[in-house]
Each structure stands twice: as C-alpha cells, then as structure tokens.
Image (tube, rainbow, N blue to C red; front, side, top):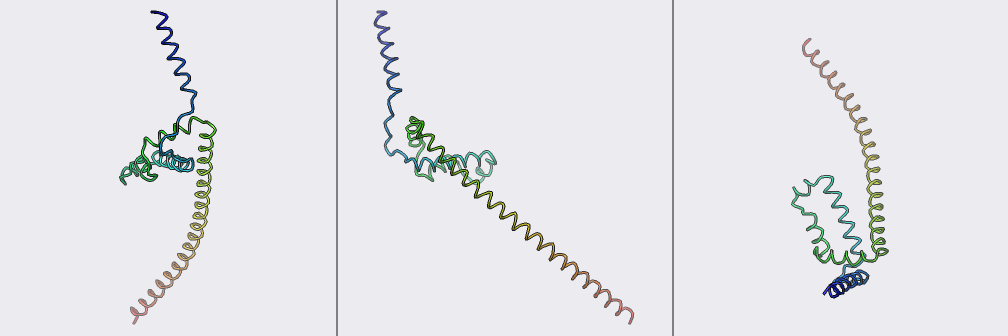
Length: 157
C-alpha cells in the first residue's frame, strides 16, 4: 500500500513538473504583440491617472478597466490568457515591455516639449499684457487728468 502511495505521489510530482516546462498553447484569438503593447501602454496611463486623481475618472463615469477593454475590443479573460501566453517566453515579454517603455518615453518627451512651448508662449503673452496694461494706465491717467481739467474749467465758469 505504501509503495502504491509513493508511486502515485511521484507520478503527480513528475507529471506536474513536465507540464510546467511545456510551452503553453496560444489561446483562441491571441492578442497580437502590437496590440498587447498598446493595451499595456494604455493600462500604464490609466494607472497613473488613477494614482494622480481617481475621483476625476469616477466623476466622469469612467471605470478604468472596463474603458480599456472596450477601447481595445477585448475582455479580461482574453487579456489574461494572452498575457499568460506571452509571459511564458521572458524574451518576448521583455520585448513587449521595452516597447511600452519606449512609447512612454516618447510620450513624455512630447509632453515636456509641449509644456516648454506653452511656458514660452505664456511668458510672451505676459510681457505683452504688462506692456498693454502700462499703455492703458497711461491712457487712463491721461483721461483722468483731462477730465479733472474740464471739471475745473466748468466749475470756474
């Protein structure tokens, strides 16, 4: 009886070990690597948005995960299965995440460039407004002086 238990346990252990080393079968409708990059990129942006101010998303009726799955026309099960499939091969998985990182860096650079341009435009606009306000102050002061002079003339007559 003990030998039978030992054989069963060894069979289970060896059977499990072999199944762990087998490459997983691609799921039906496997999400392409390019689409996985887009999905993981969007997931990253949504997670950052949730971290910054989750209430803005909630107040606008956005459920982040549902939004993401609707945007990419997938469901959570397909994403999980595709993610599991790609994660088996660490080189492939690393390539996907490297491309996500490159996309995030590119986006960061575009945003930083836009911020720099806005700062420059804002600075120029501020200078223009200050210049205009000085002109307006001179004009207002001139009108005040002219009005006071006319009032004095009227009162003296």
